[in-house]
Length: 263
Length: 218
Image (tube, rainbow over all chains, first blue to last red; front, side, top):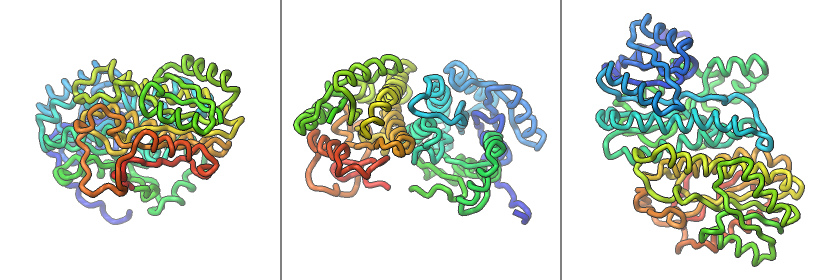
C-alpha cells in the first residue's frame, strides 16, 4: 500500500499479553502490534537469541516488552512464564499460543517416524494445553478482558497432503478453542483461533528452495499477495484481543488474503 | 472382504463388526488406543496374517478416558497424554502399519468418531481436540493415499452414542433435527459398510455425519 498507514488504535492499554514463538515470524508480528496498541508484551521465545532482540525492537519503538525464555512443551516453564508475567505487570489478560516446532519438513504417512509427530504434537497441542491451563486463573480474573488465541492453519481444516501430521495438530487446536469457548464463555473470556499466511522466515526459506512457490501462492490468493506478520496478522490478533471482539468466541479467523474460503 | 475393526469391546464397534460379518466379511477385532508405534505394527501384522490381506480398516475404538467429562483445569498431564497421544498415535500407527496391505487391495479406511470434535464441547476439551485431530488426519491421509487407490473417510456419529455425559458437553441445537428418529449403532454400521463398498468408491476425505440431522455445518 502506498497510502499513508492508518493510525494504530490504542485498544490494549495496560493489558498484559504473552505471545509464544514471538522471536520471529507471525509471533513477532503479533507481539509488535499488541505493543503498538498499548499492551505489555511478553515475548515467550524458546531462545534468548531471537527473543531478546525482538523485545528490544519493541522497546526501541516505544512499546513495553520483555523476553521470557520459555519452552512451551514443559509445564514448569510455561507456569514460570505466566507467574513472572503476572508478577511484573500485575495481571495477564491475553494468552496467544503461536509456537510450533518441526512443521516445515515434508513427510510420508507410510514412513514417518515418531519423532516428527512428537515435535509437532508437543509444541502445538501440549503447548496449547499447558498455556491455557497456566493462564486460566488469570484469564478468569480478567473476566470479559480475558483472551485465549491459538494460531492454527487452514491445513487444520482441509488436511495437507505434504504435511499430514501438521493437519491434525492444527485441527486439535481449533477443537480445543471451541471447547474452551463453551467452558469459559460464562466468565466472559473469549477463545478464538487465527489461521494466517504471512511472510515469515519459514515461508521465505520455502520460497528460496522453491522459487515457483511464491508466484503459485500469490496467484491463488484473491488479494494477490502474501500477508504481513504485523500489519495483517498482528492486526487481526489485536482485534480479537480487544473489546471490539468481546462478542466473538469459538471462531477461527482465516487471515490469508482469501486463499481458503472453506467455511 | 477382509476387515480389521477396532473398538469391538464397545457397542458401536460390535455393531460395525457384526454388520460386516453379516455381509460375509472376515473380521479381525483389534484392541487399540496404543500410543506405541511398534505395538500397533505388531497387532496389525498379526491381523494381516490371520486375514491374508486387508480391504478395510475401521477405527471405531476409544480409550474410556476420552469419554468421561473433565473440567479443563482438572486434566493432568497423564490424562491428557492418555487421551490425546493415545487417540492420535493409536490411529496414526495403526493406519501406517496397514498402508502396504491397503495399497495391494485398493482398500479403504473408515474412521468413526463423535461429532464432538466439530462442535467442541465443554468439559471435553481434550477429547474434542483428539476427535478433530483424528478427523483431519483422516483428510490428510485421504489426500496423500488417495492417488494410490486407498480411500479414507470418516463417519461422525451423535455424541450421545459415544460420550458418557452428553449433557456436560453443553452443546445445544435450536433447530429441529433434519431427519425423523434417532440413529443406532446398526445405522452407523450401514454407513461404514456403504463407504467400504463399490457404491462408496468415489468418496475420499469425506465426513458423513449421522447424528439425527443436528450438526449441518458447513
